[in-house]
Amino acid sequence: MRGVHCRRRGWHAEAERWARRATEAARQADLAGHATLLVDLASLWHGLTRYAQAHECARWAAESLTAEPAGPGRDGPLADALVRMGDVERRQARYATAEAHLRRAAGLVDGTDRERAATVRLALGVLCKETGRYDEAETCYREALACLERHGADHPMRADALHNLAGLAHARGGDPAGEHHARAAIEIRQRALGPHHDHVAADLAVLGAVLADQGRHAEAAEVLHRAMSIFRERLGADHYEVAVCQVNLAHLDDLQGREEEAGRRYRDALRIKRRTLDPDHPEVERLSALVRARPG
Image 1 (cartoon, helix red, strand yellow):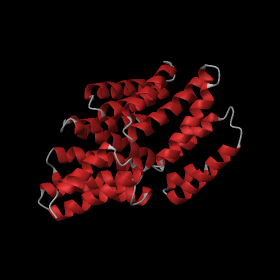
Image 2 (cartoon, rainbow, N blue to C red; image 1 turned 90 degrees about the horizontal axis):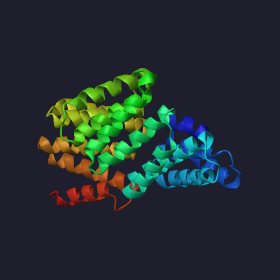
Image 3 (tube, rainbow, N blue to C red; image 1 turned 30 degrees about the vertical axis):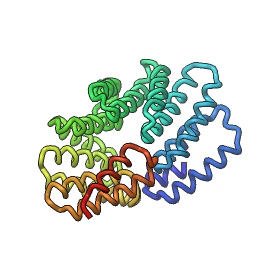
């Protein structure tokens, strides 16, 4: 709990210190019946972009829960562990393994557990988007929204679904609905979390990408700079989300003839992504090729 508190306040070094202490304590303790604590710890490591540790804790939880009798008390937490494992595998571009975990999680969630069902559908949607299955991704996102209907317009996971729909619009190359989805997500998050939360920054980042697709370069740059400032303040200068903003800002620099500034941003983004992703991750390979191809 201390680590989660520090993570939410943006104190990442302190959060990681507590996460390491909790992980070491978990290794020495008998956690039978307490696997949900491991899932929470996996989520903390994931938020710190320490994916190896996140996967270890989620796998540990899944193995412990799989040994228990099937039933609602086991199946929900097991689905949570599998979703976290699937997300880590996706981020490391191990897509087949990620999908296997997520499909298994989907089979464990019944129709009454709507929030968990929405979580699984959102995770599957992101995987489908990253593997080019855009229609499947949209179906997953809209199914997640349907699961959340009874929870009202301000449910935070509704903002997640809207954020993902905006990202999908960007991936499709400028679907005009993307701006509406991004702004709706920002509105929900700002009411719940205030204007300077990293989740708000994530929504601003996707809005910036959508505005860039529409040729609204000045607006896009302003929004992306705001997002990157929040990420740096809350998550640190070397966080993956900072790299995402740098890539989008570099693209805008290129469009406006600022080649030197664009090159600097691309190199900084590559440095960060190499710290957080596997060396052979497609994002790292694409960005490496782009940097090599630039003059000078």
